[in-house]
Amino acid sequence: MTTEPRSVRIERVAPGRYVAHNERGGTIALGGDDFSPVELLLAAIGGCTAIDTDVATSRRTEPASFTVTVSGDKVSDRESGNRMENLSVSFDVRFPEGEQGDAARAMLPRTVALSHDKLCTVSRTVELGTPVRTVIE
Image (tube, rainbow, N blue to C red; front, side, top):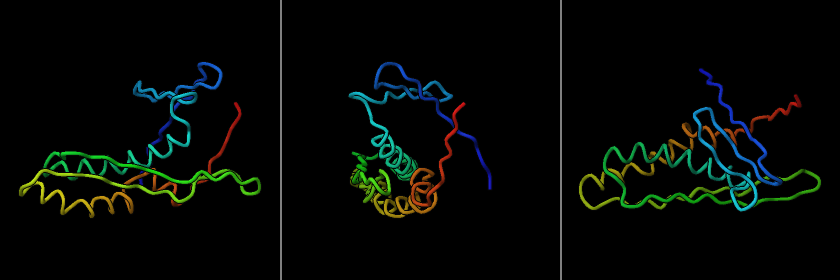
């Protein structure tokens, strides 16, 4: 087993508006009309498995279209707390006709399953459940 520390920094930029920064200089806006934290969770789940799947299948051929939709139900429960339930990741991927497209189509179910079962750190973490520690500095 190996570990690689990862982190992001969230900065308040205005009332109800935040920016997430990664170590490589990337940013994502949160709050207001931008992404909510729940939408970012859904995007992280979908992005992780989309990348795993795209990397494998596009070795055969470039997709004609590639869309991943992630959905779920946000539950607000006074007793057990807020959470997401019924998470679902849906792939709508089209490959061109021909031998290479056929090869990519044939491997799509296997690559999606491999991402879900082993590779996607985000969905694996959500499914396994990992404690979150909070610290006030």
